[in-house]
Length: 134
Length: 201
Length: 243
Image (cartoon, rainbow over all chains, first blue to last red; front, side, top):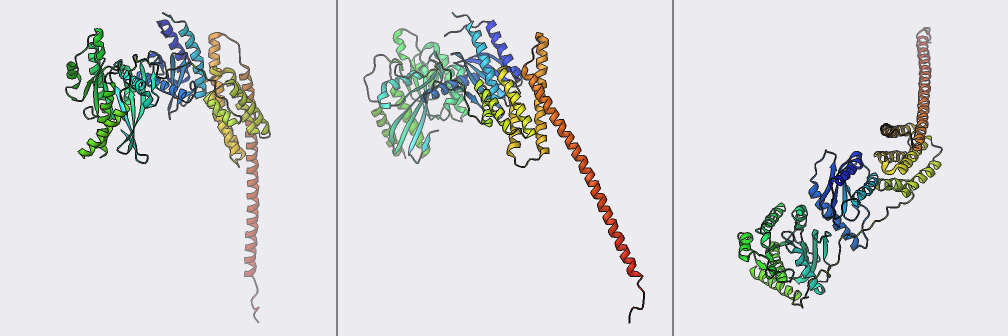
């Protein structure tokens, strides 16, 4: 499926990312497509990650993990999350074609983040559904 | 770096198909998989986008059987060729023993070939490997397109662009039709095994 | 060595020829043979977790669902009943109950620090329960520390709430916060009572020490006097007792 996103949609998505994530202490959050292209991103300003490489690797990682799931007979894994000492990274699928990647520190609990992600995914899906389909 | 299990007498060898996007790396593996599936007897893994572009890697393992008393397992990988996947390419290149550089013979892809070869050199260097020393074969792919009237680079010009310093074996081919796909593979495996044997001596 | 190398290469080449012997080439090289492993849509339900309180707290740290929160609140109520005779532990359970219900009700709308406070309160509770001979003073100290965190969270929530109210002119106050305040007030009362008891105890201890010191002084004085009397008695004995 091809998506065409106008500036309005992109602004709306960035607003969701800022309200739901940056304001609760998530250091960096970005929405990518399954090919690893960055659609929208927000960060707290404290850290400057190379989100373009992260995006490509995240998409590859998600793809590889999904393939592993199928090999073991699962449709997919419901949690994809990598825990670091200071920063952790969480992946969430948005509809069929996008991934929401959140990078957060130990001050944010995963359980709470996942609630936020779930909310944000619904909001973003609504925005994407209203995009112009060619 | 080849993985040797002295106890089981096994050697695992990693060969990576490298090259510009849409050059024919995945097609090489797909041809091998489809044509020799009954003998290879393993599954091919392809992690790709909805648009059929390689996203992470393609992977095709197969067993060569016993060579010099060791069970040799070959692992074929392809990398994503698109420029933006450089970090991913670097990852897949880790531990490589031999490389097939699949160059695109289309005239419009001349620059892409050269940039991709330079990229290979740079990425090998991150693992302290030299493009001048690693077992390497160049495949000039898509030669079949000349029948369709698409402007192709001559093999001479491709040699000049890509092989004037490297001076490694180069083979014309067509991954879509299977022309010289197996020959390329045989060549790289032989080169790689010879290099490994020297190294382990 | 070259001979050996050549022999190996020959073997490799022979083996490769065997594997890749000519086969009838298919007319079309389609992609049918390769299993499609591109991404499929699927949504898996969340995690469900077993009963015990610690496991439930860990589950909350991973995933917050209605099921987990309901089990958590139930388990807190159950364990609160078991420990109803311990005033300190009762306060812990009240805090956990309050936090649990708040998270359950507000979910993504809850204050972002709530889960951390819940984990911390649980950790305090666990410390008290699992450490064998913890004195009342130490228990109260642990409770006081957790109450500070709990109060801070409550104040954060109220502050944000009042900001929102100022924006929206809404009069709504969640029941949970009211109950929260009552819990906090009763917890504060308990703390106050404990502080008063402690002060009283301290006074009694002081009085006891003073009285004991007084008795000791008196006893020492008596002993010294007795001794000096004995000394003076022995020095005034008459001469000529020798026969």
